[in-house]
View (cartoon, rainbow, N blue to C red):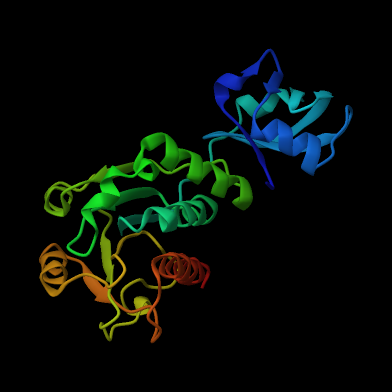
Length: 242
């Protein structure tokens, strides 16, 4: 945990009182004592520092810098991600990666190769998704949490997408077109779709193409979902810096 994240409502009269895993982390992992300073952030807001006032077991009281609660919100990332729902055990790792690296929005969708039982998993509950994103944000030192939605029908999402940036790309291992041929250096503002383990079926690829998505490859390797997400966001970040 590289950043202690606070909910806005947890700050009252310049103090925050933590009794959950964050308090335990501060007390036992960081070994903090009264008078120590910690790096903290407000979800959706600014970052700053807090002074430890007291530690009792997993209960920690913090004095939060006054500008923190009213700090500037983080700048949203520029990548909008459409992700076919992966296996529940994989989903948690993927969400933490997304929370750390950052996306503007996340839409989890169905696909032909997505097991229907996945949609009954507790991992797809909104609270579980948000918690996994928070864990990633703590690691990545960001206060940005992307808005997200789960779509049980792919066509319902494609017919009425919540966002639609100008560039649309579809990660597909059989494509011969590299990402940088579609997303030009200096900008990563795009909507990207990553399929399930085994990839999109051809009919789905054609459906995406009909809606303006350009199939691209991330390289010669066949990647697992969590690898594809990290490689894609890394390549887009590099393109934006060039």
